[in-house]
Structures are given as C-alpha cells and as structure tokens.
Length: 140
Length: 140
Image 1 (cartoon, one colour):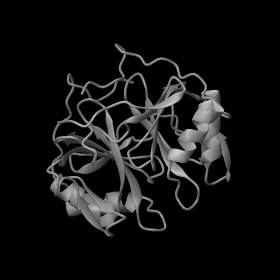
Image 2: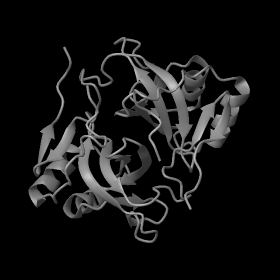
Image 3: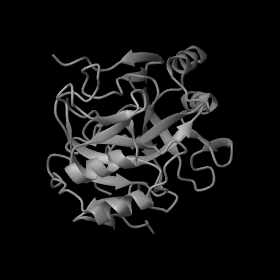
Image 4: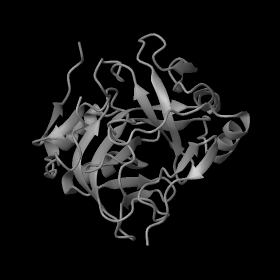
C-alpha cells in the first residue's frame, strides 16, 4: 500500500465539517471513562509522527469545524488550541479514526516545531546501540 | 527535518536491549494510573501509522529484549504478542518515546496487515468531502 502522504502526493486541505458530520464522527468514537480519546498528529507532508495528545468531544468538534487542531489539556482542564501561545499551530489536512473508534489520527500541516521543547516532534528519545539517545535538537 | 524512514533510508534492525537499557527506559516512562502507556506503531519503511495499542512495563521489556512488538491487551488482561494468532507480527526497528515519557512510538517492520479487519492499518475511517469514508479495503 503506498503511503498517501509525501511531497509528491499532498493531500488537499480539509474543508470545515458540517454539524451533521461532526455529530456522525462523535457518534462513531468510543471515548474513555474521562470522555477523551488519544489523538496522534502526523505531518501530512513527511509522514513524521509529531505528537500525541488527547481530545474530548468539544475539541474534536472545534477541530473539524475550524480546521485548526484543538486538543483537551488534561493538566489545565481546558481546550488547548495548539499554538495559541507558541504560534506553532497545526492545520487539519485530514481527520481519521481507527477500527475501534478509540484513537484519532490527524494529518496536519505543522507551523514551526510541534514539541514544547522546540524540537520538530516529541519523539526524540530513541534506543540506539543499546542506549537511550536524544536524536533531534531544538530548532533555533 | 527529513523523515528518517522511507525506502531510500531504511533504518537498521533493532538489536535486543540489555537489562540496563530496559531498566533505563522503564524508569524514563510515565505510566498512567493503570500502569500503561499508549504505543503508536509506525511502519519504518513507509511512515504509515499502523495502529495504537497499550504497553505495560512487562510488554515494553519483552519488546526491547526480543525485538518483537508486544502490547498489553486491556480486554484480555494479558500480554499480547502481536501476530501470535494471526501471524501478522511486528518486528521492532526502533523504539522511541516522547518528551513527557508518556507515549511510545515503535517503528516496525509489519508482516501482513496490521489491523484485525485485515486492512493494512487501523486508521481507515476518514472525513472527506464532509462525510465519513472508509478509505482502505481488507487485503485478500
């Protein structure tokens, strides 16, 4: 199966979703006992997995309606419009969810680094040569 | 940042980890109140996000020691050696974890379809043209 991302086959921008589609998506999802689902953000151009955060129904509705990725901050107990303080916003390219409806995958166009450490993505700790290595640097 | 996967730059196979490295990884991770972390499996060759499941300390240790992806099945309450019944095993190419240590990303070499529906990956529901579409078929 060819990957459906990559510079040679960019996905179209996601139009905003109607109320009916938002309702259908929310109905299809299986939220956990805290009303959340994990959401994986993947760069729509490179395929890089950028981060994982959580969404509740309100965050999903806002993401689908506005085309801007919005999570639920468990620490703040509030909607987290990605990039609202850093400017490192994520534009929705495509919204997907899995077979069980308990995990979301958002393909995004990322502005700036995705990670709060200023690294391109959050998964910069890797086991290589039988030790833990930090495999990317913060961008200037 | 260039993606570090793709046919032109295959990652080396992951050697098995020593007890010291397993202990260091477990120490660096922040397990939830059920002793679990979400684990995202990504195809090391194509960058395709295959699935998301959960790992506990034992599953992570086994994954690192054997090079075969092992999850924790929340429904069965037991280790889930991916592919043990289907044959659709995942070989570990690289083990990574994120900035907060609360999410794992495993780059894998997947045998057969990753999804229990026999689709290549679990994220086959997509919002396109303001409706939910199934974007892949089960493989024969």
